[in-house]
Image (tube, rainbow, N blue to C red; front, top):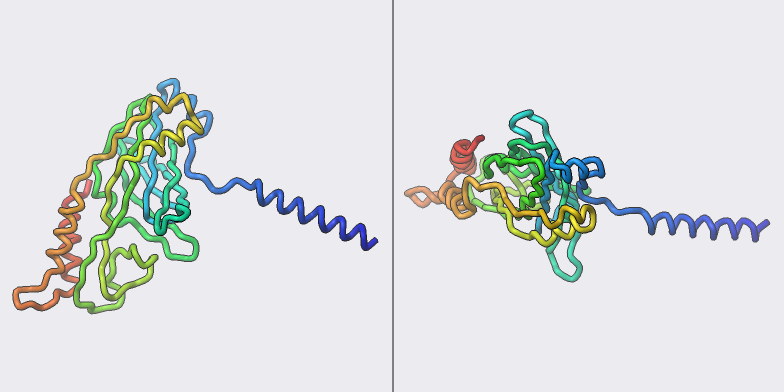
Length: 252
């Protein structure tokens, strides 16, 4: 009896280990077979997007069809690069969309055990873009950095966006996300070759047009937090209001 129990335990452990080993890891958004057929027959379009360097386990970028108001989520899974400190690469998302005009209206960085980090004002950084049936379009790799400002703190909760501290409040600096699409087309092409090789040769890199540059925004943040004529540090609430007023001019 003891031998049987021991044998059963070994078999159970082996089966458990086997099931864990073969369990598929989470993946970024992938267009399904039906969607692929529609893209191939010029009845819909495919959009690819990935992210670089934000150290997010998952990044969700949401698009809105401005004609129908229908919303779509591109979910990008990131993996930390081995042997390269701080580098994380997003597995490109592949999403099928109807022809029409789209805008990026929100984004969020998600890490298990930490508060979500919203990509403040991403809806104001880029112009809407048009998709046509049959398009196979790589928007680019979204790189997110931070513009920082120092100011006199008046309350404990006046930080608008917190990037570098994993969502925790920081009473010393105010941080705003700075967005830029970069061309890492080879990663998107690899994802297509693995999933839909017939579409790989049609892939084009067409990032949404930015309404402002990183330098322009950083200059605005620096100016908002600059000391006044008497050399006194500005109140954070005043600097934050100046930056918000500036960004309000870029509403779609």
